[in-house]
Length: 170
Image 1: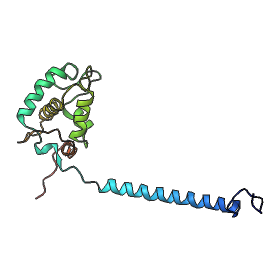
Image 2: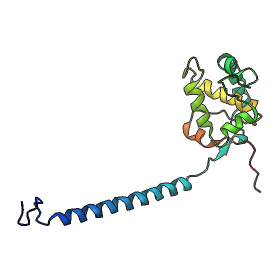
Image 3: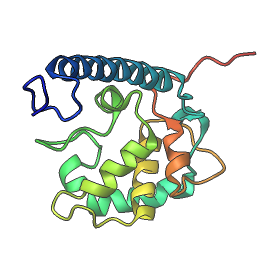
């Protein structure tokens, strides 16, 4: 104990400790507020995906391989016409684009490769899963291109799935 009867060995008393705690608490709140603002700014400043599914991001050959993979691994649940059945969601038309609008090909690949087929999740190789999502894109009338989808997470994160082709700027 110090001469004031407090157990604070600094000799500054209880008042100092409470003031110090309030100051520290205030600083923590201020830092959290600043950090939250910085995180929101960083998210807002994140660049939009460089491509979209309308840019021809798969080839016809890749989609043909995907159709064979789809028929073997997916059609028993999602049906041959990709219309879905029971818990297997549709993979075609508005039902597909409503769910996937604004997501990326990386998101779609992650779901297909990680959770499908339902009776053997994760059994598709990355190449087989890429072929399947190429077939899904082709079935949904997204245009093909000259280069295959590649197992490149950064590139796939930069391909946005959109319902409609964006307007061309001239």
